[in-house]
Length: 109
Figure (tube, rainbow, N blue to C red):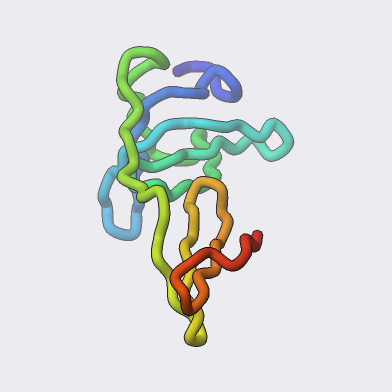
């Protein structure tokens, strides 16, 4: 686009990473007007803030012309730490501690 800022939100882009000379796919999902940088959420789930005027960017699709990729993120993870077992709920970021009986003892944040 010829105009940067909020007008770039939800665009599908690919950004060149000069270290390995590879373009990575993502979506512009936020803009900070104080430092004129956009947040790119890459398809692998990582994100970074960039000044898109200074980056080599390919503008692929306007908002609504593509489907956002679904990340394959599990609902929960079994964890073990210092002899304790628990269940980490990814979306709520809560941990359920599981006692020796296999029942949930408490919930911690």
